[in-house]
Image (tube, rainbow, N blue to C red):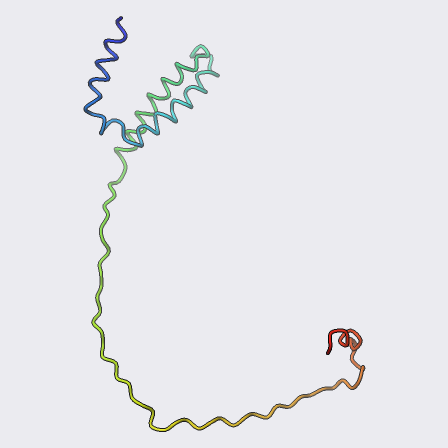
Length: 130
């Protein structure tokens, strides 16, 4: 009968402070600490191989370390980036005075030093239509 009364009073005291106590970093620390504490408590001889006791210690230390980490976290302030508006410049388009003359076609010279099947790969090239 003695245990439920202090537990109820502790829960009653924590109910209004839920916004400050149960922050995500604090809860994450308590969960990870509880899991680690359960494993360590189960494998440790000093806790009598009691996983529940290790989980309680781990959750408590994880909660404390998570709240310390949350208190030391930098505040994130979001600001809108500045908006730069550039005024439009007038565009002046002028028609070309005379059309450009057509370019004369260039001469193409083909140098083929291989006559017939004199190429080293001549037979292979005939397979591919060369």
